[in-house]
Image (cartoon, rainbow, N blue to C red; front, side, top):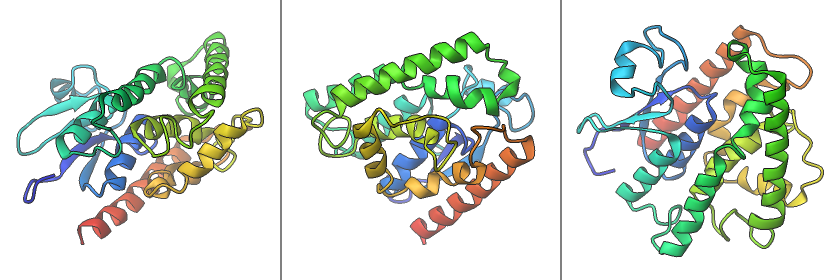
Length: 254
């Protein structure tokens, strides 16, 4: 971000997995931003289906990035992370070497309908009752996730500390917000026993700067393995997460 350039606006909520990925990247790189709370699926004033939001992002999805000075708007977490890395020269997380970058892109493309199924199969059914996800779809998503984790265990992480090598990249941020949310310390809805390399990677990712700041929402939500949280618990978790995020951002610019 250039000197004097206003912070970008990031529309979303802390509980959203893709939103957390973008927030974590920006905190890790020390890039200030403003989180504009936007409720997914809502037509209310602060909802992603509100006409004003749809005029900005017709897909009505979060996260959405907006540059106040240029008016540039971009949706989809992976596109946002790649754009920010390209714009700001964050070559450590998105390498300029075309083969190393291709490895990151490989994972980012693989993520959808694979690791992303963690939310569809294990978390969303308890948090987003309004989605009415059929049991058959949940079971299929769980099976897909398990296959994806086996791929990470025997492939991506077989001989590397992180998904594409010895340093953290966009691939790791994108993957962790989905996989990490399932851990015993958060929602506790998946047994990682069969995947020791994945478990080690999860532990290593917890040491990456910004991890604790963007996962306040999950610590507040707590274990949902036996009982789904009520709406007030979810709202309070998001509020506490926003408060913690503002404190971290204030410390960055202060």
